Length: 467
Image 1 (tube, rainbow, N blue to C red):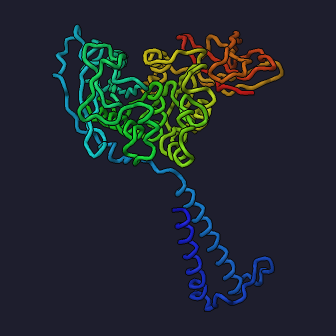
Image 2 (image 1 turned 60 degrees about the horizontal axis):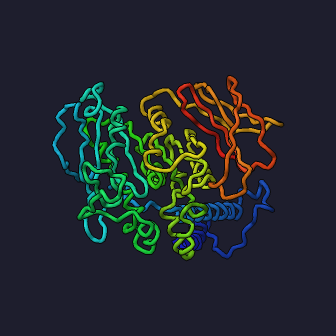
Image 3 (image 1 turned 90 degrees about the horizontal axis):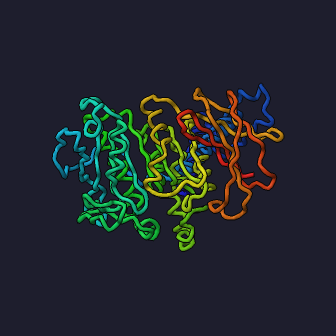
């Protein structure tokens, strides 16, 4: 494509230059041309000099066009039809309208139309919860904000996750991205308590995520997963009780991975919180063995199509990255590359030492709800930390924004083992009015960062520094 474009422009250049010159000045392409090096102010009015200037301008324009079209041709186009996915999908309720009896909170279940898979239409199972059905303080007719909940690997649509957000005052939709639905009344965290949908999409195993790379893009799990996240967003926005200007997305593990992509491709969201999941999986992640099995072409195709590093630079909304220092799947080096790839000024980090990995631990951090409420409801914001600086024997971290800091800590490691297997040491830092200070860590430190808490015990962190 790139070579074809360049050749077409060069042919156009060869064709247009003599035509334009001959038409305006009656001079053939072979006529001697005076270069600007020897042109005086007197010569600048001569036809030959004007021809030279015109020719140089035309060449510069075409070269610029070649460069511009080459860059755009090399930029990955979205695999998804976003205009199509932005329309509400067909759906059907699987249960009756809630009675309004708050003694029996009602979380509704539904099926909505997914993308075709294997030549057949698919359906996606989801739970839908709204504040009016679980919280007495919310008026049923009040427009409410909404959040899309994206499960991780081995997960499904979790009823309690949707109910948790409804009790916070949000409508919530939690979908299954593996072609299943939970068995009602059973523990959905146990995979045995799920039923395969007759027309479900691709499953969520590593084979579907990586082993299908030679298939058409629309027959691979990442394609369907993102499409179904965007469709869930379009669906919940179509409900009359939703304030369409206040929606957010959060996901856990592989759901965090998907949240990174969704935040870059669906500009209708107002905030995003990926938990654990990130991009640059090909550089370091739990799936390096999978990439090692691919040839160069397969690896490049997977990265171009499905790695969040391709989509994070598109993010324009506020985004909070939440992770632990020792996550087995998404290590801090790839995590920081992902954070750095986001151009948004409103990006923040919440990295804590030894955060456990899982669905309940992944939706437990209070910072998730506080960050979303900050940007959707105008609630009290999280503290905001600037870039840490070294000044002699001190680390100085500016405190930005109006939210005061109540406590702070320095975390460092001197280990040289794999980044997600290191032991971390924590020491108290000093909080001043507009900055945090801490003694510099030992000279053999291999990584360090600073965390801070506000009066609500909400934690934010600086970027991870690798000396």
